[in-house]
Amino acid sequence: MNHSIVILPGDGIGHEVMAEVKKIIGWVQANTDMSFDIQEDHLGGAAIDAYGVPLADSTLEKCRKADAVLMGSVGGPKWDKVDYAIRPEAGLLKLRKELDLFANLRPAIVFDSLVDASTLKAEIVRGLDIMIVRELTGGVYFGEPRGIEDLGNGQKRGFNTQTYTTAEIERVGRVAFELARKRHNRVTSCEKANVMESGKLWREVITALHAAEYSDVTLNHMYADNCAMQLLRNPKQFDVIVTDNLFGDILSDEASMLTGSLGMLPSASLGAADANGRRNALYEPVHGSAPDIAGQGKANPLAAILSLAMALRYSFHRGDIAELIEWAVEDVLSAGIRTADIMADSCTPVGTAAMGDAVIARLAQQKANAA
Ligand code: NAD
Image (cartoon, rainbow, N blue to C red):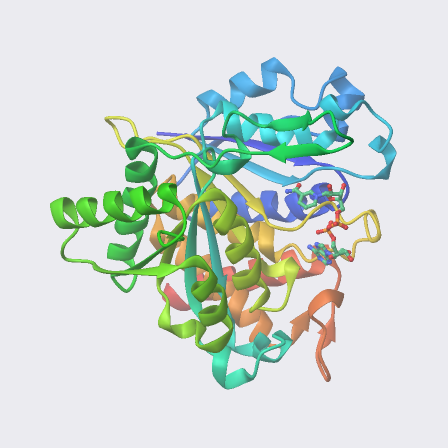
């Protein structure tokens, strides 16, 4: 059976990094039992240029039907002046919303050879492997009522509503517990139950879900502000962190920066699983379109390549091939092969294409060794 993939390179370095992802997919197709139906389309600024909107309905339909969507990055100065409602980033937000991608997975992994890229001491981050699960479609970013009202006395009031239902908390909690079972079996749930009713409900629902279905997983609760401190003090205490949209936004950025390099960070956004276990899914590097280096062949493609590994693991249930790709990335880094963003003393500088080729060379070598 062919797996269907939609590739949306987007804008700027999105094209460059996705070219390397396509090379890896080609290698997987030629050297394993997996095969793919691949379609490519526009998103963001490129879609504005091609279709007049940042996400065309026809593109959205393709993404709905696909087993996985792989995205590069969107945005850039060329579209700075377009109407706010159709800016490039609006295409990505609409895609996430329309596919109901409620669980955002952001791993923060420190590769041994990049341990010095972190701003924290090597002993604090060496071997770090955290997964942050952020609720992505609810909470204060979407809650109603919201707005800015005129108080009539020269004052205004800005307001947003933090809101979560039992079902919204349960479904993201389930993703976190399932992930923990495949990792180190520990979940830390973060909220502000001490000062927010939505946090109180969050804690109650996670506690009940744990007791009913996941009592084999170790669960602890932590206030989100304490979690922000603990991530800097002793990040290796965490396995899976599950939290809401607002706290997740901040904690996932903090955790990812423990690793020290934007060009290395993959992500996945998942929808609900149907009866066959299939879910809508979008995989993308955390970085943006990097207009300052776009078109120069300098971008680090490893975040995009590691996002493909996440797709293989979470959409195609091929953890074996995902691990092979992750091993190849680690081996390339150990050999001192580096793009400019992760360059270090006595390493070999390479561009985007050479980095992709180096990963493929490791994959080929591993296959030859296994034969
Ligand atoms: P950015 O992530 O594009 O770049 C920040 C810095 O990191 C830049 O100096 C860039 O050169 C560097 N960088 C980023 N990715 C890199 C890589 N793979 N290899 C080497 N260096 C890399 O963030 P920004 O400059 O704030 O935003 C630029 C554009 O991207 C904006 O239009 C913004 O809206 C958009 N953006 C898109 C996404 C997305 O598509 N998910 C995310 C963030 C920003």
